[in-house]
Structure formats: C-alpha cells, structure tokens
Amino acid sequence: MQKIKELISKITELDYQLMKIAGDKLDNLTKPQGSLGRLEELARLIVGITRKADPQFKNKVIFTLAADHGVIEEKVSAYPKEVTAQMVYNFLNGGAGINVLARHIGARVVVVDIGVALKTKDLKLKTQNFVDKKINYGTKNMAKGPAMTREEAIKSIETGIELFNDELANGVDIVGTGDMGIGNTTASSAITACITKKPIEEVTGRGTGIDDRGLERKIMVIKKSLEINNPNFTDSLDVLSKVGGFEIGGLAGIILAAAAGKVPVVIDGFISGAAALIAYNLEPKVKDYMIAAHCSVEKGHRIILQYLGLKPILDLDLRLGEGTGAALGISIVEAAIKILTQMASFKQAGVSKEIDK
Image 1 (tube, helix red, strand yellow):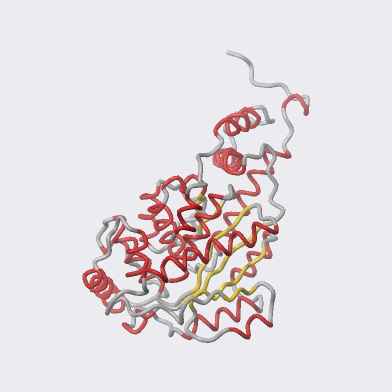
Image 2: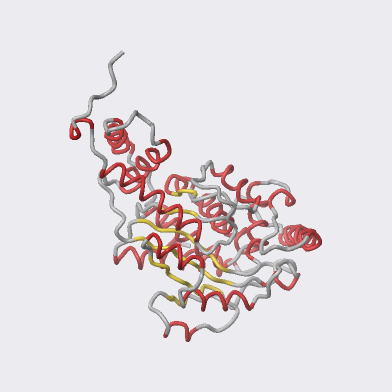
C-alpha cells in the first residue's frame, strides 16, 4: 500500500497557465474562435496534462489486461470462461478488434495476463508484447464471498503501476485502457452500484449478450454478492477485493500511474470505467488526467461518466472492450493536438482576423 500512497502524492493539478497560453494560440489560428469545439478543449487539456506547449504523440500504448472471474459459476455470461485465454491468443496473433484499431492509429498493444484461469506462460514465446503478471488463476466467486484478498487487491493496483512505469521508462506519450475477462461486466456493475449508490438494475446490462432471463439472474447475483460481502464504498480496496477483478485493479493502477507521470490516459468502456471509479476514490485529482473515449452500450457506463463528470468523445454503440474505444478516442485526441501544432495562425497565413466590434 505504501507504493500506492507514494504514487498518489505525485498527482498534482494541471498546468492551467500553459492551458491559457494554448487557448490563446487556438484563438489566433485561421478559424472563428471555438469553431473546432471539443478538439480545442482536448488540445488545451493535453497541454495542461503534459506540461508541454507542443505535445507530440510518438509513442502510443494500449494496455489490454486479461483476467477471469469466479462469478462465472453463476451463469452470468453467454460465453464460457475459456474464452478469456482464447482471446489472449487472438490478441497476440493480431486478429482481434483491438489489434486492427491499434494498427489503424499506430499504437502498440501490451497484452497482460494479470489473472487468467489457465496457464499462459508459453505465450511469452510468441510476442514481446505479452507480459505475465498473473496474481492468481482468476478471482473467487463473489456470490459466495470476497472475490480476492485485500492483499491481492493491493497487488493488482501495484501491478498496474509497474506496467505503466515500465513503458514510461522507454517513453510513452499517451495510453489507452482495455480489458478482457468473461464475467467482468458483473464485477463492474457491482463496483458501480456500490460506489455511485445507484440501483443495481440501473447499472447492469447484458454484457456478452445474455437474454432477459440471464439478465434477471445477473442482477440477482450482484445483489447477493453485495449483501454477502457488504463492501465499504468509501474504501476502494475493500470494494475491489470483495466484488472486483484483477484486471480492474490493474487498470486503476495504470490510471493512477499515468496521472502521476503526467501522461494522458484515454479510458475505454464499462470495465475501464469501473477501474476509473476505483482510481478516483483513491485520489479525486486523477479525474483531470482521464479522457473518456466513448459511452458504452452498457448502461452502467453512462452512470460512471456522469459520476466522474467526464464527457465522452464518441457514442458509437460500442460494447466490445479490449481497448477498442480507447484506440478511436486516441485518434481524435491526436487530431486535436495536430490542430494546435500544425494549423497556421492568421498572421502566418496572411488572413484577416474578425472585424473589431
């Protein structure tokens, strides 16, 4: 826990003075003031986060963390738990949605086994983009007791911190969060209901595509899990340990570490949103470093974004996870920075400015 506390102490406010300078520059580019809307807002934010007047996105990384969930025993998913490991292989072979979109934006995908139920050590032989950080072979069934120990919850966040810092040592300009884990929308709904205090029915969606009967069972399982474990909503580690997942804790660690490292972090969908809740509960200032890529079809995600006060860039009815929404979000953020750094000013272009009134 000491490592987490030390990291949190390094998270500071944005550089508002540099943001003001960036805003003045944007106002003097060849366009009516504010006419590029949120692109201008994002450009100012990136300057404030990075403390760089001329930020560049040379190194883009998307972390896709994979882990299994014991609650899958309660038949809360349309897919079996074996799919988690199978999809890890797909990621490493470059055949998943996140691989396609990461290639599209020129980002590298770092695939992490932080809690897959099957042994995956041989995956390291296939690609250098695989990291073995397995904490355990999936969580326990939270409908019968805590999903993990408090020590494992701490370890998952610390693992996320380590993952980010390893990339930071080699240079990283922007990161995206992604996930893979059959059953993780159940854990995310439980976290969301606990922290936001919204009714379970309002934060629980169909995940992998369960039918009405499956949705009713999923809601019942989440209610049972919260009743049995009674997590303390003011204590992120208690919530994470009782109804969370290893990948959720790992993503929370990445978010915290990115904020401490003054690197923008683009948040994917519902699972990443649950991780953002955990991180925000630990240190509210982390919110300023998070950019919501999109609003997921999972209805709990909208509630998370409202709770955090984050406005999503896109709304494309996505619900895949993996970091796919984050990849698209990064492309928009990069476009915003290119407007700031590449567009000509009125003076440079010899274009007349607005007539003074």
